[in-house]
Amino acid sequence: MSTITATPISTAAASANGVVSGAVDKATIANNFQTFLTLLTTQLKNQNPLDPLDTNQFTQQLVQFAQVEQQMKSNDQLSTLVALDKTAQSTAALAYVGATVVVDGATAPLSNGSANWNLNTSKPATATVTITDATGQTAYSGTFSVNPGNQTFVWDGRGNDGRQWPEGAYKLTATGFDANKQPIAISTEVQAIVDSVDLTQTPPLLSINGQNYTMDKIKRIVRPGSTTQG
Image (cartoon, rainbow, N blue to C red; front, side, top):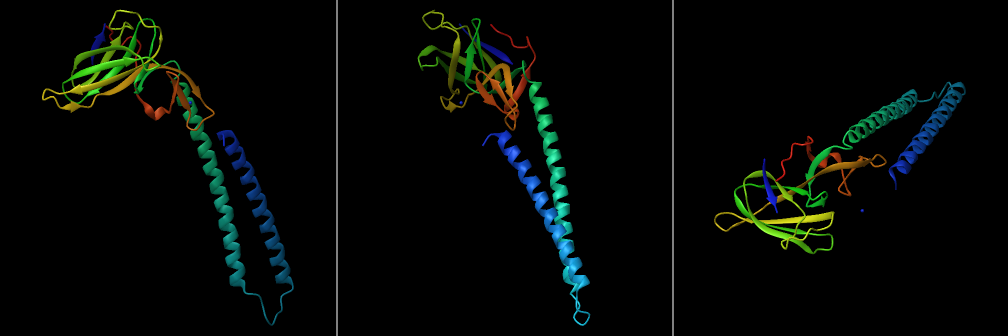
């Protein structure tokens, strides 16, 4: 990979409501089932020998209650699997804290005189790069040649007039044209450290550059020292 150097109902409440609802459903089914058995026993004891009760109907009702009971057991097992999956997600998310990752985005922090982006294009192009601060003011602009694939763009924080811009968040916009002067798309990625993880959300949210991302948004994990800066 080449390098270009520029000189915003909670989950806990929903879960609690689900537990309470499940407990109420179980109690209701159990009470209904007990009532049904009591009525069935009473009817069998007091049935008219000349007009016996329809045993097929009783059997069907028993089968239906058994199916409901089996479904409740299946729901309990499913709830256990969901809880295990949440635990696994939380464990995986915690492993990202402190790691340097790459995600789609255009805003990167300027820190210690360096801000980094990854540019990606499908074929050679001439790219016009514009970097703006949080207020939209242009801090730097320049034209560079970019090659197909990923390449790192490093800005040292100095504007076109040589002035050093303060640390903070800066947005990079890149527009490109190929050799035939036809527009070509240039996507941007940001590389930053995962600051924290919010385990109260499902799935967990990773905080990167002050923005929240789910784990599936991470495209790569970068080993410390593997990025070359010019």
